[in-house]
Amino acid sequence: MNVDIVPTSGHTDPARHFSIRLSATARGARLARHLSAEQLASWGWPYDSEANHTAALLVAELATNAAVHGRVTGRDFRLRLTLHPEDATPRIELTDARPDRRPPTPGTLQPAAPDTESGRGLLLVEALASHWGTTAGDPYTKTVWCEVPLG
Image (cartoon, rainbow, N blue to C red; front, side):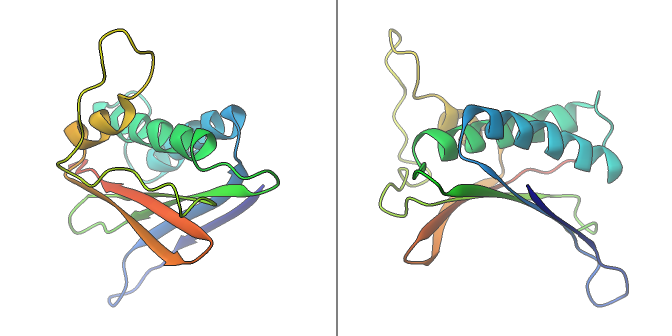
């Protein structure tokens, strides 16, 4: 487990960052949720606040997708939280090893059939986040991100 916590201070860059690599497993997804809740609490959103619960739910959904749909044997996924205090809107990013498996674009999601057990995670992300999307920074990974106002 590799962790980077970078609180930057000063006038030019007041952003805070938290980044960790976790195993692309259900256990890694659960740990992502718990660690993000802890980090948000340290940034001023207590565990029992609705803002913390919403952000942790979004992390759980994206981390589960990274572990299920973005898994490559022997490769981790990365959780990154970025907070710009001036607008109290953290950016949640989950990077996995399957750039070939991109989710549908925002605004094009179809509701899951009532009798299926999966297919609702990104619908939750779309409903709770102010923005979300997918980026590919290199040929080996993709990042699914969302932003959620906590203020």
